[in-house]
Image (cartoon, one colour):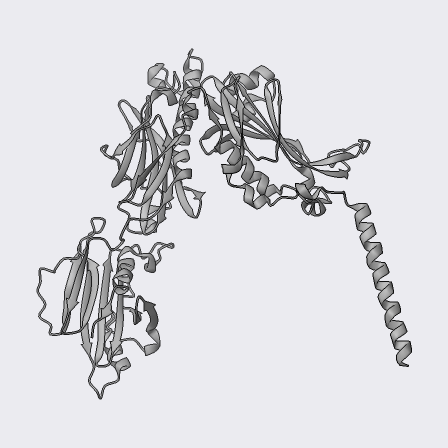
Length: 568
């Protein structure tokens, strides 16, 4: 019986081995032979430091590209491509009679620079229709122009027309990778091929290649970048060398502190009638995210509805400036506003465009179309504004937010030997003019007048004694009076235990009504508790996005509590 079992076991093993061998043979027969040396960790290739540089002496430009990507120059066109060996039918063979493809291309991008503006170039080649292209504006990093899609059933390409100067256009043909899209029934198999560039990686590489594009003959876009860092206000960004940033001197509604730069006329177009071109980078007086990034920009109709812009780990709202007209023209531009590190940051472009209707003495745009020069001036005005806005976006994409140093800034140290406590608090909190003579008060109702608020905010620190026969929890419940109602907490469960710095605090919200934020934090000791009380007024309580625990005063209180030390 035992021998028979062993024979069966050995037979089973041999069958399994045979099946595995057959499967391996089948797989090797079906799959292409891949050179292992071509398999690379593409996740490490997103940094451009190890990339190669392509130079085009004829048109005076250069860009960086992946070291394993093929580069070919054919007359006016530079082609970047990458492929892996894989015999397969063409997914774009709609007739079914094309020969099998020997390689699968996962990246194919063609560049060429033409000595015409986008409209002139498109009309000179006769395709596509300019009216169609002009309705598809597109911006990417420092580039501004147009993008169209040409294709059917997942086959085709994206075509970009980026304005480099009034007389130069960068044309990019970026092929669809049909085999790696869901339109191909075998795309899941293709995605697993060794050495393949995944669609997400191709997108990242394309963006990096374009970001490295620059002229080498002294034109504006090629001038390279410099870095401006502001440790005081916690931001750093890169900008073209032909710009010069200086401390803010111009009155500007959205910036409290920061820098500005005049944009030279080399970034303009001859007939744009655009002047007073400016760039601004800095911080505002907004005290929370809702004030920093309003859902509708101010109340004027001259500002467009905001559109989100994602930069790294930060989200900015994009606001188009479309009006504010005076006798000498209308203010135009774009404003990016974002909330980070408890600070509101802004990057903005601004210019004044003269009225073309006045310049050409015509009543409206339909009448002006028949006036010589108007159409060209209107086009140049649009291109000049796009180029100015692209500069602002280029700065935004390099912006690093480090946060204002010492959020609890200009600190004072409070020490009380009698109660055995020390902590730091902002010097901007000043003594109230109305004195309070309370035996156990440490800091009596200090106040800070926020310039963005009508009512001061208050900070109060005191000692709450507890007798031996008393229950500390009940004493704390009795100490809390909900402002506006006179009620006490219904139970001690409403207190939340939190750890800040070296100590545990019991936290409770004390003002559950409109427009005011209130908290008390209790640091319990043997004979009582230290009580830290905050009152923050004029908060946007009705705003759907308002988060009380991101309020500026609340965050300052958190910073204070983290410095508390018991010294006896």
